[in-house]
Image 1 (spheres, helix red, strand yellow):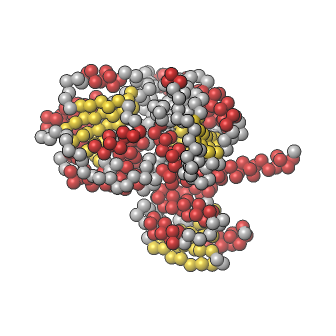
Image 2: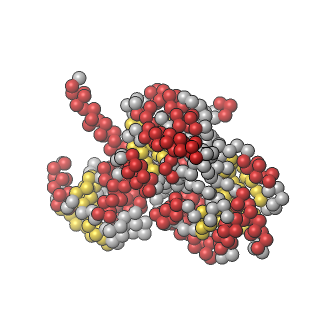
Image 3: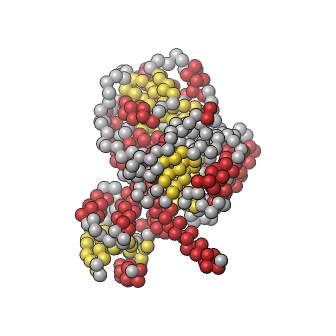
Length: 406
Length: 112
């Protein structure tokens, strides 16, 4: 099976690049996969992607940059690339802002799965968030109620377009229910997020030095660090241990300059470190060094890859009281301490419960490790391949009468 | 979880009883590891009232195992709660699911 993946991909820094990286690593190890082609976004200044990889024992990997973040014609460009590459299956690794941070360009990009289907190639989507659960105002797509309403209606329209794909997978059961019932479709499936790596049991001991309170992601829209910094100031005054706040990651594409502004605004806060972009090889150290991983979100747009990563490294997590996270906790076996979104005191209290009780911190980290390691990504990839095989077989069956007629 | 094994017409029949979750998965994984040549298998889930993604994933691996041996893995006797999980993941389309074990046995005879 030759599989094309429409996605951002390292060294590209767009959202979901890390998910694609891990997914592809496991995909290439499957005997039923003969080739993986990544239809990636073009890098800034047309920087090159790595050359084709034909390592023995793995499916060959080819990266073909064919679309550009923010462009109007991404769906068309990707369709043309699919016509050139002619894979058996195209899987789109998407969230609503994958193709652009402007509404119209972003929405036009979401036509891609439909365009791809029109080529006759099996078109599948992994949809990491759905419009129905996004707080548009907080996610940077609102502004006033009328604009929000128009955006929501457009979101419904483009969701219908996405649902033109042959298969749509989401990582949260509730999303399957919403899409199935609202749009009256039967080809939406639950596919668990999966653990990025088959990581051995982590060492729950922390390195010497200050206890690190870490947050990881792309910040500025619904992930904001102001309340976390204020919580950190409270903790520094109330806890008699050396602490460090580590803000790991970059601005969201929608909010360029956000972290620099925050850094200036809170220049007076000591023991705070902004790492900037964290390269793939540096991710383990960032997580391993952290005592607590905090999710300073005021809204969610889907399942959290960071939560799964934190679980992989056996970390205690501090989460906002928001629907999606609560569901992840209960559905997938995670646990953590919760805070009221954007409430520094509430966040500080939640963090303190871990800082002050190492045994509890390790218990929670251990439970999160078990939750994450329950379903490795290699097994999630098997689910996709099973669906692809079934759909490809159906295509063959449905083509047979036409062939007989001709 | 308890696992009972029997054979019928050279078909391996596994009857599972109990929760089928991450903690119970190793029992079933071990059976497939110990029976590397297993080709045609029926998993009777009549005693399984709960299955999570790990349990589903184990069945997917079992299906791949059987197909690699040029066989198939069929499911039978699913309780309603288990069937709902299969429908949510659409894995009900990937597996052949039968109401009874005898229906599954008959299907093997027909399919071969």
